[in-house]
Image (cartoon, rainbow, N blue to C red):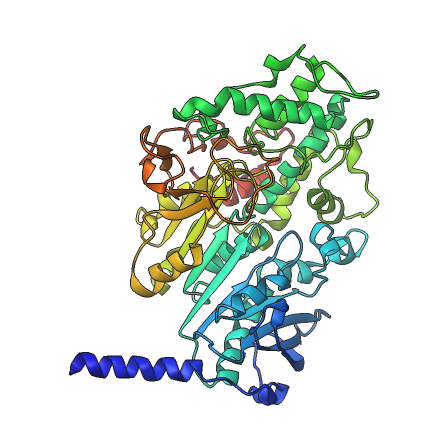
Length: 563
């Protein structure tokens, strides 16, 4: 009888959730007066959107809530969408990419699954152009950064949107939010970790993939390939870059005992571009046809990562096997190197504070100075590197990070370093936060490696049922040892379960390599790429020439904690 009563209650709850809301109720007046601490609501509008995102049956009421933070002059738009039928009682915050605080197009697939969703523009444009370029909002005037818009982008608008999104979800549906989830990659991953650090009770579960945390380390590191080419006076062609990638994969593919066209043990890969000197290149026109000493030196410096003029460690370089084309988007037969737009925009707007500043003329010494300046001026705003996640843990929150080991934009070594710092502070970090790494995969996807197939479902099982993700289910549309150029469909043909860091899933040597059951977890294969305590990372930027004592003390406190 008890089981029958429980089933009846469950059925009643499901029926209540499934009851449709009339489109006629999709008005601004259908929600109570919104209150956001520290902000003033300027306007609320609502519109009925049938087939939201061109998805049949995805019938939603979309709200736009415009707020301002008195005294700042900002105007922030928050976009909330609530399904008119089948709301599952869960709110999902949608992360952004680049300089866009929220990717609005990501909302529709989630409302189709039953979630109410929220995203914010943080007070500036979220169009495709705005992803790469912060110049329209970075400065109030030459020399003066718009600190309020930067704070909005870093974290403040994320919390405001979450408060608004939960309130609208409950008011409009007449039911409470049972659970809330954050879902983001890159900037969205950074935002997820910023929420865990600053607003630990906002979300029950967080997906923080390929997170752009430690912003003042990896953003200058993204500019390093451009700086190296300018200082060495040699511009590499796309064919030279590709030759290095291809050769590195060929040399290090088998380090994990399995030839699959992927570097699965990147820390064990000691290949250098020096081995390519004198080799032939595919070329046309005026392109170099032989791999030169200069080309090898530039590529090895990029792989090594940013260093001071004395050779001291600043940050990590591109992992071997990752494409150069994002951070060094050089054109064939061009005598001018090309910068990565996001990092170039950061240097101009937030470091030089002059949108007309020529980043092509930055010397190695000036690069080091800018690196230090970024830490001193912005760590407290957008560093997002605090390892103290105990308040999030005490809230009962759970978090998953996934990243490709061939990430061409955000160095996975830095993400691993962050996890090591958390673990040094809290040895039980595995109980609430787990990281997973996928060899042969680029930034937020791409490449021939496997990517997660049910990450959100596995996070929900952890949050709602206590079923921790001992493995992260993943798949790929590429067969084993396929070329990136192979035309593939959308269906996965290869499956592999990813092990939590510091383990990596390795082919067992027996069985079908396209089957998840043929892989086993193993540590010490070199997937853990973080230097140990006595390695160069502990030097950080402590030995930068010309650093005064007070700057050194601040940097040691904020940036150079034990690894």
